[in-house]
Every structure is written in structure tokens, then in C-alpha cells.
Amino acid sequence: MLDAPPEKEVLDMNTLDWIIIAVCAVVAILAAVISYSIALKKGYDKRKSEAERSIGSAEAEAKRIVDDAQKAAESKKREILLEAKEENHKLHMEFDREVKERRNELTRQERRLQQKEETLDKKIEGIEAKEEKIAKREKDLEGKAEELERQKQAQIELLEKISGFTAEEAKAQLLATLESQIRHEAAMKLKAIEEETKEEAERRAKNIVAHAIQRVAADHVAETTVSVVPLPNDEMKGRIIGREGRNIRTLETLTGIDLIIDDTPEAVVISGFDPIRREIARVSLERLIADGRIHPARIEEMVEKSRKEIDAEIKQEGERATFETGVHGLHPEVIKLLGRLKYRTSYGQNVLNHAKEVSHLAGVMAAELGVDIALAKRAGLLHDLGKSVDHEVEGSHVHIGADLAKKYKENNDVIHAIMAHHGDVEPQTVIASIVQACDAISAARPGARRENLETYIKRLEKLEEIANSFNGVDKSFAIQAGREIRIMVKPEDVKDDDVALLAREIVKRVEDELEYLGQIKINVIRETRAIDYAK
Image (cartoon, rainbow, N blue to C red; front, side):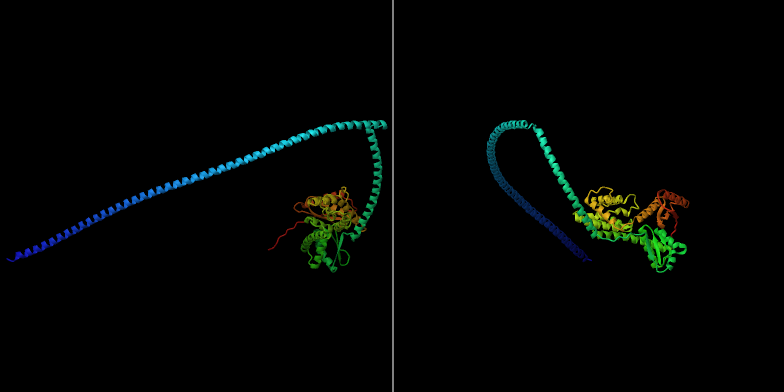
């Protein structure tokens, strides 16, 4: 129990040591913190002083740079001013030099002008002196002229006194005498020349015509108004007629011709005044016979096909005519019109053959006379152009042809030749006279034309023209040598009740306007068709 207190003292000593150690540690830490703070402050002060020194040196450097720049700028400024002064001095020197040169040039020009003025003054003085001399000479000449006039007048008075005539009377008598002598000599000379010219002209004209006829020899056969189609056998006649005549009636209706089936063995006669219709009917009938199928529908098909082929052949004939005559550059429509002339006759003469012959004759005559051969042949080929449509257009074929030539921009000489070839106008050119002569030569050949055929065709054309003039008529065909006219009317324009009235009106017109023997049958047909196709 007495030993217990010393243990408590030992425990207190240990605690105290630990406290002292902790205090020392805290003091050491505080000392370290204070030392670090002092060191930081010293470093800050040191850096601050270094920064201040750097700023001071930078400011000094900047000041030095600014000073150097100012010095350099001042130097550059002085240099620029010096250069400007030198440039200004050069410009002044150049300006002074140019001014001096211009003054010198002006001085030289003034000197030259002064010299020219002096020269002009001298020339003017010389001209004035010459003018004075000329004026003086003119005055002298006027005096001499007056003296000569007085002498002339005195001589004239002396001559008048000696002859007993005044000057005017003597002049008139002299002229009258000379005129009478010249007129007599001129009349004698003119008469001799005229007689010689007539003889020479007649001789040359005969030679030219004979030469032209000799070089352009052609056969002429008067054309007829019928065509004969051969048949393989007589049985074919019955097939052409058809049941109750429907086939022959269809063919006649579509073509406007008249089929004559008589006792002539193995032949059918096609009669019609229009050669184009007759040719269409002939071609159609020959194809139907070759094909063997003859019925109304087939007939209609063949007729239409033949009509198109005839149109193509018309164009080919026109082109062939231009090739044969050497006439080129015609309008395509004019070529077609020429082709139609193949199926046109004039007093039985084929008009296309006639036109080609006139063209050849005109070319030969033009060559002999020394005029334009190509133009003469062109006028000869086109002189009867109006006959291709004269049955469709009112007027003579001369005026129709001239109008067609104008329409298609033909040469004025060609148009005049067309107008003058029948004497409708007086020929004003050599070409027109040549065409007129050649037309007469071609038409005057023996057998070339036949008067009755032309009269007959004109009567049939007039008959169709009367029928076509009525409203509602689609087409008409004169058949049976003009003894019958078949007229197809438009069913939408002409009613059944109007057919008889129309026939009567046509009869009245025919009786009033045509002269004929016997009677003419007016056959008006109104037909309505309904066509449809099964699909």
C-alpha cells in the first residue's frame, strides 16, 4: 500500500513527456510553416524585383526602338523629300524643254506661213496682171468681131442685091431643093431594099419552114372515141354483163362510159368521148378479165386502182414530154397538166403529140433565126396548156393557158406566145410569131385532124357541163354518142321527190342550149349505200 503512489507518479511522468513531445511537434510544425511562409515571401519579393527589373529593361528597349524608328522615319522622310525635289526639278526641266521646242516650232510655222503669204501675194499680183491683159484682149476682139459682123452684113446685103433674094428666102429654097433630091433618092433606095428584103425573107422563110418540117417528121393518126378489149372467149361476155346486168351497169356507172357487147366475136367495145375515162374503163376491164372475179365490189376496187394508176401515168407522160423536148424547170403542176394532154384530142389530133411537135419545130426555127432556142421550145410545148382543163374551167383554152402560165410564174415571153398563137393578141416577139407558125404547120398536116370528131366531143362536153351546173349533182357522164347522159346525184342533197323535177330542169336546159338530131335520154340516179364492217 505504501508503494502505490510511486506508480501514479510514473504514469504522470509519461503523460507529461507525451505532452511535451506533442508541444514540440506543434512548435516544429509552426516553425516549419513560418519558415515556408518566410521563404515564399522572399521568393515572391525576389520574383517581383526580377519582374520589375524586366519591365524596366523592356520599357527601356521599347523606348530605344521608338527612338530608332523615329530616327529612321526622319531619315526616310528626308530621303523622300530629297527625291521629290529631284523629280520636281526634272519635271521643270522637261517642261521648260518642251515649251522651248513648241515655241521654236511655232516660230518656224509662222515663218513658213509668212513665206506662203508672200508667195500668194506675188501670184495674185501675177493673176491680176494677166486678167488685165485678157480684158484688154477681149476688148480688142469685141472690136474686131463688130468689124467682121459689119463686113459680113455688107456682103450679105450685096449678095441679096445681086440675087434678088433675102438670106432666109435663099436658105429656104436651098433646103427645099436638097430635101426634094434626098427624098427621091431615099424612096428609090427604100423601094429597092424593100423588094430585096421581101424576096430574101420569103426565100429564107420557105427554107426554114421546109427545113423544120423535114427535121420534125411525125406520123399522125386521127384518134377515135372507142376502144376494143379482146376477150378470151365469148362466155366472158355473160360474166361481164352479170346477173340481171348488174356488173356492166356498175362498170358503166363508175367510169361514165358505154360498154357495147354485140355479136363481135371475143371482143367488147368501150365507147366514150373522154379518153381518160375510156382508158380507166379499158384497164379496169382487162384486169377484171385476167383476174376472173367479176362482181360489183371487185369492179369498184379495180376502177379505183386503175384511176390512181392513170393519174401516175399522166405525171410520167408529162415528165417524158419535158425530157423529149429538152424543156426543164417546169412547175410540178404544169408537168401534170402536160401529161393530161395525152388524153385530150383537138379535131382528132392528140394534143400532147401536137405540143411536142410544135416544141421541136419552134426549136428548129429559133436556131435558124438566131433567137433563144430553149425559150422557143418552152413556149411551143406550153402553147396548148389550157386544153388540159378547158372542159373544167370557163373560157377559151388560150386565156386558160395564159392564166395557168401566170399562176406558175412562167416567163413573160412564154405567156405572150400562148396568148398570141391563135391571133387573140398581136404577136410582139419573134418567139410568139414562131409558135404561131409552128402551130399552124403541125395542125395543117394531112390526116392530122378531123373536124367532125372535135365538134362531137365539144357537144358531149357541153352536155356534161349543163348537167354539172345543177346543185346536188355529184358527177355526170355523156354516153351512147351523146344520146344519153347518166347523172349521179348526192342523196343527202337531192330527195327522191326532187329527182324527177331535176331531170325535167336538165331537159329544159338541154333543149334551150344544144342543137342535136333525135332525142337525148336524161338518166338521173339517186343511190344510198350503207357500209359497215364485221369485226
